[in-house]
Amino acid sequence: MRDHIKRLLGWPLRRALDPRVDMTVHEIDARLGSQGLVRPTIHDRLDDLDRTGRDMLAGLGWRDGPAPGSELAQLDAPRAAFLNWATGPDGYASQAGHWFNPPVPVHHAAGSVEVLLVNERIVEQPFVFAALAGLPDGARILDVGGAESTVGLSLATLGHRVTVVDPRAHPLRHPNLEHAACRLDALPDPAQPFHAAVTLSAVEHFGLEHYGLAARDERLDLAALARLRELVAPGGLLVLTVPFGQPPSVDDFQRVYDEAGLSELLRGWEVQRSLRAGRIDRLTWQLGAPSCERHGVALVCARRP
Ligand SMILES: C[S@@+](CC[C@H](N)C(=O)[O-])C[C@H]1O[C@@H](n2cnc3c(N)ncnc32)[C@H](O)[C@@H]1O
Image (tube, rainbow, N blue to C red; front, side, top):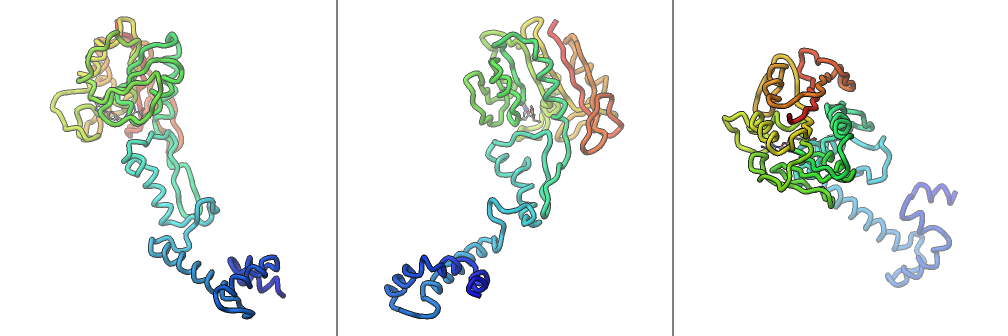
């Protein structure tokens, strides 16, 4: 019976009814001016504290919310929506410049977490690493537009000397990693040319409005590839990935290139490997020309003649 009452009362009464704390309870009650009551005063005080805490949390909009460490089944829809926003490209981490576009973002819903989609980084990142695998240790690599990416840090960790050029903040640090916080066209000539340049899903945005830069009439994507021919040593590598599809297009966000557009972009470079990859469905990418929807990328490895 006593056990049943304990269970019904729950915490904190449950602990206070434990005979081992009886003496302490009576001691505290005596100090509070009451003695020998069936329900010790300390219990009321603890209940008051509990209620005050809950009311404060309710005032903040978190009544009965799941606490850190709670079961997934307790995740409700409003909190799921909050998590999706907070961990996405507009969330707090992103606003602080600490968001690294994940190849497999997840989606929270009430009581569940699922894969949202698989994006093009799933094929772009390994293509870049494979293309650079033959470089000598300590090669000088320029990562163009690498702010929201861990690729530059990986290359630096592998022992290469990496310069990330991007006007946006780049919070990652490594002794082999340098951040030039400017547009590519403002990057001064380096003391020595680079062994390789990487432009992973970057030049298609150049000169357009996105990423807080003013739109420009010039084709900054073409200018970028021409400038890279000056920055990379003769015989040096270019690894480029861009959106690819039919028909080609341009909007405020990005350009999508077709074969002719890609050739124009790569003029003056000696193409060594040129692949296409397309999204078959939300979770699957495959090598081969993408379908007429715009879910495709071109993956190119070229050399400066
Ligand atoms: C799609 S994000 C890059 C993605 C990244 N490379 C990755 O691996 O996920 C495009 C980047 O290009 C940068 N950017 C835009 N115009 C630029 C310019 N003229 N020079 C250098 N970076 C530029 C933007 O700030 C943005 O960080």
